Length: 188
Image (cartoon, rainbow, N blue to C red; front, side, top):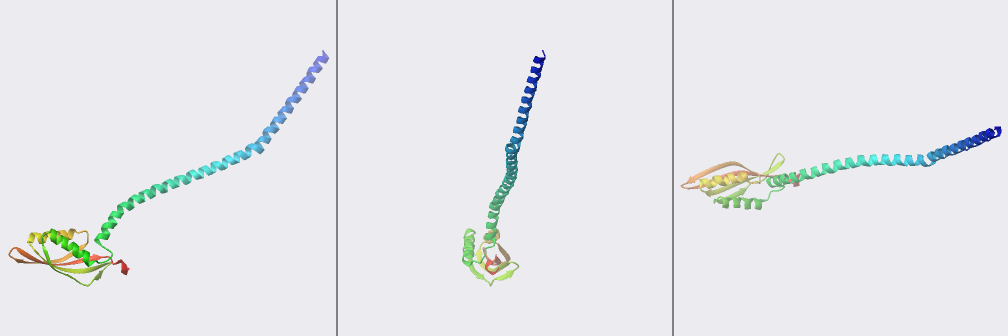
């Protein structure tokens, strides 16, 4: 019986030794794997995560900038219409022939006749340049009045300074004094 017990103890000692040996090798393998395989992988993953966070932040900033640029583009489109109106009202330079064409068109539309048109030398008024215009027009009182209203409603800014009416039966002669404004960008 002793021999059997001794053999069993020997066998247990041998099994324990094998178990300890296996456990030691396993722990060494896990340690080796974590130090040389998992650690670099975790570093790479952390680096990629950091890059992903940075890229996400940059993407959000770019999305915000794109949205702001789209809003600015819409605003610019709206303001282009207003800028065109402003450039029509106050052109960069005085163009006598365009003004005469516009006045002739208004006169024909309102059934009056422009007898005489005179332009005076330009003057500076603040940031704007002005040219004085003197018009002699003939027509009915209603047509002269309609002409003056249309002249004030023109997209081109014209300020009427005075109107002197002379009546001879149904025909009215009007002496109109006005100023035409322009920006004169060449002098700036």
